[in-house]
Image 1 (spheres, rainbow, N blue to C red):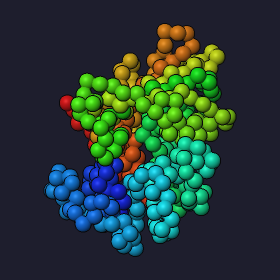
Image 2: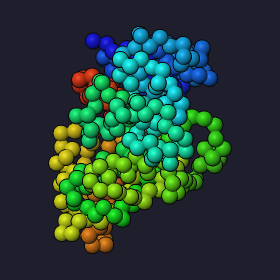
Image 3: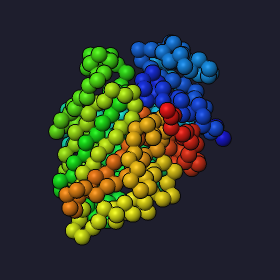
Length: 345
């Protein structure tokens, strides 16, 4: 069976990444592409590399016939997504890649995104769809809220350790480096080559919005309120995230026990791999894939551990996890459209 797919926000990086992945999905057919400022254009006018494929023209979002779609992907800015989601048919599988439905508490949403939540009726039916953790909750009658890129890289290693009380709940530090595609496609002086080349920029210090969903999910795992220190940085590569996470082992727990717990948790997963021996995961190991590559090392300070977790921000951190969630919700093989090796060198 072919599921008909509509992508709203198709002209942005997450939208075009969805197109790339779905073109290799045997059960997916892209039937409509929505984009406001580029409506009426061929997608190939924006992305010439897609000239080899037959794809629909870009349309204004309000002009799309959603009766012809089974699955709708939303690759839109936060705030905008809530307004559009309210107008979509209720009998479709909707997968949202924005931050609009990730936070369960509307007070938290207003605090971090600085405006009222406009679609709490939808929020009540939303699942924070970190696939390997929430798989049983990801069903076609749920509104799928895709996690953020930084949170995905941080939550996958930390949640299993907190669930088993193997690390302390205080003093966790996450230091994450991201490729520039995480900032989106809009022109911005800070993202110019001349600004970023041979440079390295921390941003969102002590206040990045992804902190909210990280702490929400860690608190659920720990069964108590969690806070972490999180600092993201932009590095001069196009894609990829590498997170260094610093934790205090619980009393009497070794780093080897932490690693064994992660190995056991993810041993049957297709897209999360715990490195053998002392291999250090790198962005190049996962670029263009839906994989998360993790290792954990003992710190020189007794009782502390260092976790390295790396993903592609556009794939496992966005569009790839969205396709994975679609597969789960529809009862398909979870790997469809996602069995890609990293490009190397």
